[in-house]
Amino acid sequence: MSALSRRAMTSTFLRAFLVQGSWNYHTMLGTGFAFAILPGLKQIFDDDPESMDTSVRRHLDHFNAHPYLANVALGAALRLEADGTDAQTVRRFKTAVRGPLGGLGDSLIWAAWLPTVSMTALALWWIGLPGWVVVAGFLALYNAGHLALRVWGFRAGLQSGRDVARSLREARLSQLGSRIQSVASLLVGVLTGAVLAGQGGLSEAGLPWLILAIGCFVAGLLVGHRVWRPTAIAIVCAITLIAAWGVLP
Amino acid sequence: MELVLIALLGGGLALDATSVGQFMLSRPLVTGALTGWMLGDPALGLMIGTVLELYLLVSFPSGGARFPEATTATVVAVATASVSTAPGAIPLAIAIGLAWGQVGGFSITALRKVNGFIVPEAADPNAGASRVAAAHLGAIVLDFLRGVLITGVGVAIGRLVVARLAVAWPLGEREGFALMLAGAAVSVGILLHDLGGFRERRVLFVAGLALGIVGVRLL
Image (cartoon, rainbow over all chains, first blue to last red; front, side, top):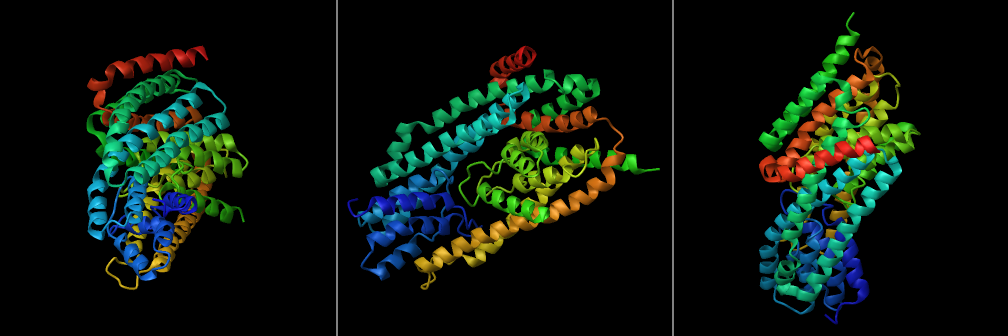
């Protein structure tokens, strides 16, 4: 660890914000991971460019994780490289963590944190808060969680190295995701109530629109994601037909 | 000149969706407000951003997922609606945004295939630090250019459509807005489905519903 300067660690952390820049179906985050870890590797293999290139190539392998939690693997891989861990162990470690880091991040961020913050912002806008307050509040709240997770993940990886799984278990991230989802369920209700009863809401538009909205809501609730695209297509077609109706002589 | 600036804004914001940072500047709510502010009508931008945020609540920028591109869709919708004050401008702009989001999604898939050819292989003995950095940063530049192109073409087409059709829109403003909201209700249903379904979450959902109704009545 002593081999790594604060500058190298900071640079690696900042590069992690670009980890998905070259996302592709072949190596997924692989190239982004190698790009992000470069400053650390440059310092570790300062006097041995050949070993550095070998190490860079090692990190070009297929890798995937949630982009925020990729920091956990990045910090841990940097620690393993700094400790002089053999190539096979580093590779095995990355293979072992990529699945859990993807699933955990997806359930915590995409399925809990982002919708919760989005719905909070939408409900506040609907209730009548000024737009700039809503947008600024959305960005501040979302990124407070986002940045905290990135910083925690990178530090946990750096400190724990191969034992980072224990840090993940102790952090109880999946339980945290479940609690956030409970808040999200409450907010789905708040938003629905605000859209139904608020000024310019569906209750003012009349019964046919209310029935249509309830039908769409129930379809989404029962069928899930499969119904999104057909509904979007139906709305686009409906708007197009109505507009065309107006143009007809 | 305005079209170029809008396209650059779309390209820049689209980077945030996956390639750079993911600070959620690319969400419709934020993108709509920024585009509206740039065009001198932040309220319009925020309104369209809010409706598209509702639709795209369930579209996450998850790495491998194929999803409609919310960012360019929102920039296109706001820039399209801004050319007309007719009641049909906003529903048409939303429809164009939703359709163009699919085009944006296809372009992301295509770019990811291209990225597969430009990134160096682990087995390549010439793949060193500089080559990795060049390929990675090059892919980010390509994503920016993709966003610029998709936004620019979308706005150009969208503005032509709105200029032709918005004035003849036969419904009132309220009905148009109600149609958009009714469609967006599907995403709210899907979200509740993802959160465990009505049976699992009914107490919290109903409590929230009551809170929302009382809240808007009181405020």
